[in-house]
Image (cartoon, rainbow, N blue to C red; front, side):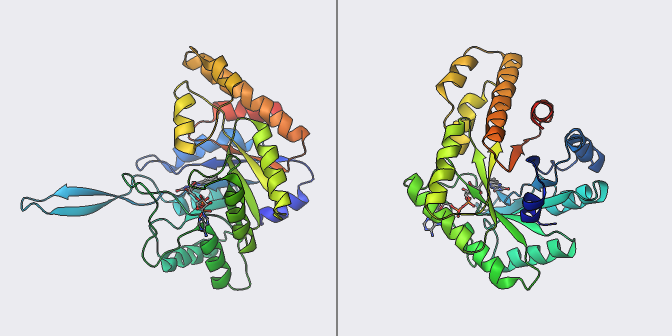
Length: 305
Ligand code: FAD
């Protein structure tokens, strides 16, 4: 089933979760055990993130370097097939990125996903390689997610994928301003994207303002809020740095001097309040970034769904 059909037919807001493929060496059972606590809340779909290939450069005795491919994680298609075989009826939404791939590789991936019976993807540009300052498209690859969405629409036949794309309530860090970023988001929707999932945010007013501006800009597709509970004191600086977002003063003051346990409780309670408020404002669904943690998300789901 397509995510857009789920959104239309669900009748009430629902949670979805996003997982990161496990590091190699972790077993299938460990992966599925990690997901099991969420399943009590019937998420209709699970997103699986995708990670670009990284390389290590090993020095040779003659002074040259050999480039070795480093893949630390299990592929998202293996994770998708493990989930699909255990949880029938739960849709899997693999993320698909432009970074490090040619257009042909993207299309080949789509063919494989379709063969697996997958009808949904989240189309993203991806980030720079470690050590790079700015994103460099792969020769023969897409430069922006909007190009990839247009490419997918041109490539696929009648059996269309439902395509989600990313939106940034506090703007993407490379965009000169929120208005320009929303213009670029509209290009993704005009190219054929069916819905938007937002980057995490900790102040709901930022999301409400974003949705309002998107609607004013003519973006009419569903905009699903993405939530990640803050779970360690370190994330107070790490999250703004990694995702270019603001932590509200009230939350950062509450976390000042908090130990790990206290920070976890404060972060979870903050996310509960955020979700209750989002639901009261009529959001169609809430997307949870699990980042390998389940206890806090389960607490939030218990309170809100
Ligand atoms: P784009 O939409 O291409 O935008 C990138 C930047 O380019 C923006 O600043 C935009 O304003 C600008 N831009 C767009 N079009 C143009 C244009 N025509 N001309 C000039 N500028 C333009 N990363 C991963 O590697 N794997 C994942 O699984 C993953 N999952 C994610 C899930 C969600 C819900 C979100 C919000 C992000 C995820 N990311 C993931 C991170 C994402 O890849 C990065 O944020 C990346 O830097 C941008 O991706 P995008 O698809 O938003 O890019």
